[in-house]
Length: 375
Ligand code: SER
Image (cartoon, rainbow, N blue to C red; front, side, top):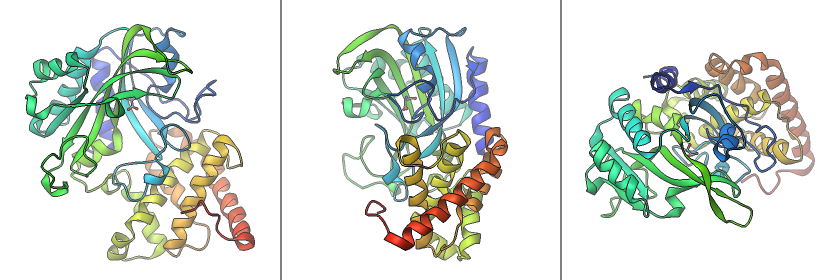
C-alpha cells in the first residue's frame, strides 16, 4: 500500500461509516492565539468539542496537516536521530461530536487495522489510562485482545491535551510490535518503553473534559472521540521500513538530496541523520510557506526561520554550501502536490522565499558565524 492509497482508504472507510470527509485546515489555526500551528487532527474541531460551534454533522474524518515545533508539542530536536518523529506530518483522524464513544472508536480502529491494513492482531498492543477500566474491558470484549497484551499507563502517556487550555481526555493507544530485533531486550520491554520495538501508530482520545487556565477540568457538554493515526508511521509499518524515511513518501525527497550531494548509497546511509533533517524540514518549510507563513523574527515566522536554518546547517554537513532548499522543496511539491494542491498553486512563492532566506542567512553567517542554538 503506498501513501496515496493509505490516505484514500482511511477516508473511504470512515465515510462508509457515516463520517463527513473534511479537508485539512491550514497549518495556521484560525482565530486561536493559544496555538502556534495545527498540531493534530482535532485542532479545526476544537470549538465543536467545547460546544461553542455547531456542525451539520456529528461524525467527521480528515487527513490533517500538522506541525509540531515551537509549541506544547515540539519535536524539532527529535528530528534526525528519531526513526519516527517529524516537524511536519499528516494525521488521519475520525471524530465523533457527541455521537459514538469508546466502544465504536475501538471497534473501528481494530477493524481498520486488522482487516483493511491487514496487520497481524497478535502484534497489536493497546494501552489504556490506568483509571479507564471501561476502555480496558472494551479492548477485551470488542477486539478480543488478551490481558497480557493490554498495558495500563499513567496520565503522562495516556491523557491527551491539545494545549494547556482546551479540550482533553483519557486516551488509548495502539502499538505495533516490530519484533525483538528492534528491542532493548529488557524483560519488561512493552508499550511505553523508549526503545524502537513498539511503535505507537494510533491514538484514540476519549475527549470529555475542558481544562482551563488554572488546570481545572470540567466535563464537556457531550462525550466525544478524537483519533489520530500517524500517517508516516503506519506507512512505514505497512512497507516494512526501518524508519518513516524509507517509504514512498520520503524516497523521492531523499533521492533529490542524494543527487545534490553526489553521494553513493553507502555515504547516504552513513549520513542518515542529515538526510532525515533536510527531508523532514523541506516538507515543513513547503507547507508552512504555502499556508502563508514567512520567515521572520517573531512567533510562527521565527519558528519557520529556525527550521530553515536547521536544515541549512545539516546541509553544510553534507557539503551543500550553496542554496539547496529550492531543489528539495520542489521534490516535496512534486510528491505531495497531487493531494495538497496549495503546494502547486504557491510553488513560486515557496521556491522564491526559501532562496531569499538562504541567501539572507549566508550573509549573516559570513558576518557573525553560527548562532549558538543551531546544534
Ligand atoms: N489528538 C490526538 C493526538 O494528536 C489524537 O488525534 O494524538
